[in-house]
Image (cartoon, rainbow, N blue to C red; front, side, top):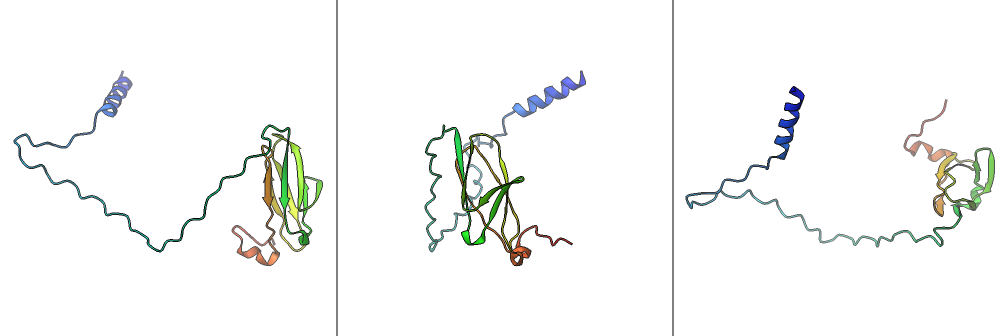
Length: 147
């Protein structure tokens, strides 16, 4: 029974209206209103924002296959592999059945750190591959030299 009482009190206290400000009954002057917040500062020399553009729609959103385009500098000779399967050297196009699940790809190139990416097969995708050399590695977030 005690649980019902607490639940009833909680429900009633939540349903109450917030208290209203007192209004003068005798025709007196109302209390001064709270000061309004200062206006937002105006920035006169602000640069205009770049025009934001949405993604272009797919050619055929109901197609049975999707194309994942991997773009990289051809001079790097970046090999793309999916598990033990070597897919080739980037830039390349991968065609997969739509909705067949994500592809966990590993991109390796001489003198660079391996790049792990996940490509999804729910729509056509274009992925730019940014490979980092071993010398650039200490500046990367989360990099730790292996012992």
